[in-house]
Image 1 (cartoon, rainbow, N blue to C red):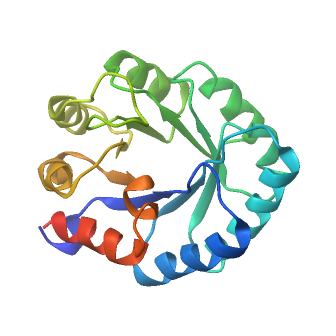
Image 2 (image 1 turned 120 degrees about the vertical axis):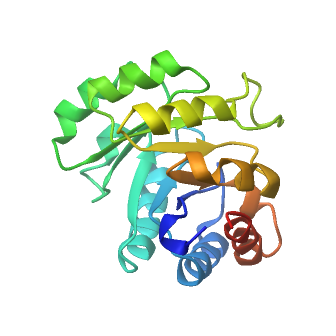
Image 3 (image 1 turned 90 degrees about the vertical axis):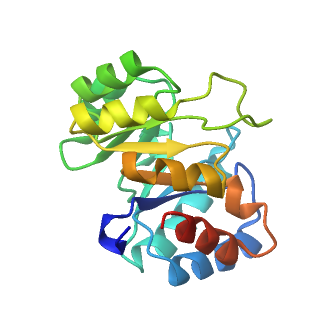
Length: 206
């Protein structure tokens, strides 16, 4: 597969991290591999910690012309100069988020393995729909999104599709022809060398 035909890379932060150690790791990954979008996906409700992380990650991303979205915290998007929001409730709040943020913001939607939820999100104005997980993992206990869903979506729906969750090099190789983006999180951050781990995933695309 030619490089220009490969799916793009969408990076997801760990659910918890120390800024002092994570920011250099993130910078190294963004410098080594072409990244289309970064998602700040911190767990918890410590708004001060999330705000500090948003500012730090935004600086790292925007210095490299990488878009940054935040998981669910819609009210922090404009306040911290982020590019949009990634919604974890399928299609339920896409329309409201689009109205609040305007036409230029990125609004993404996690839809699990549900074609119906994906179509509803697309119709409500989502810029992309995210399906997953692709394999079994302690992080994901839901139904696995099958290759057929991505193949159908890529053929029928114009809204870009993202494959996320429990990805392996084998799954990446199999899904590369039928997805627009791969979202990598724990697949690389759990490695002592996230740059090498991500480059291995990119190589698996062919």
